[in-house]
Each structure stands twice: as structure tokens, then as C-alpha cells.
Image (cartoon, helix red, strand yellow):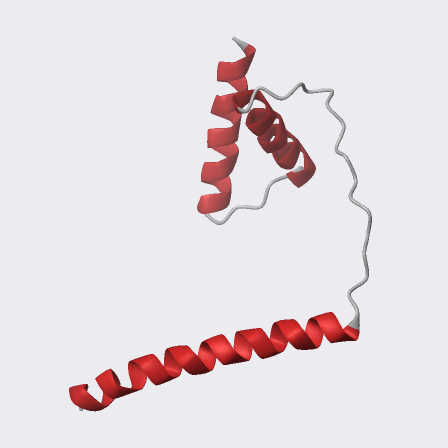
Length: 88
């Protein structure tokens, strides 16, 4: 069966990499991984990837996201600080 043969080859290549060896053809390995994932998800091997439109972030959006992350981090620090003092 072709699927079993491909799985065996992937296991072999993975074992090689895990042991510190370099693959002769890393693109072949990646292609086998993609093929196996497509097969397991019942995606046609000929399915095309739809490209998303690139939308450039504005500086205001980036600043707002940073402020939100900073506020969340400060709240987490404030929530955990009393516990840290109790442990000392």
C-alpha cells in the first residue's frame, strides 16, 4: 500500500533527523509531510491554497495592541505579586 510505504519513509526520515543526521532532500521530507496531512484531513492532493490579501497594519493599530498587552501583563503581575511576597 502506498500510504503505508509513505508512512514508513516518514518515520525513517524522522528517526534520522532525531538522531542528528541531515536529510539528503529536506524538500522531499516536507512534501511527504504535507501529503500525509492532506490525506489525513481528506483534502484533495490537487487542492490549491487560497492566498489572503495582505493588509498592512497602521501604526495606531500596533500601538493599541501593545498597550492592551502591557495592561494585561501589569494586571497579571499585580495579581501574582502578593503571593510571591507570601512565599518569601
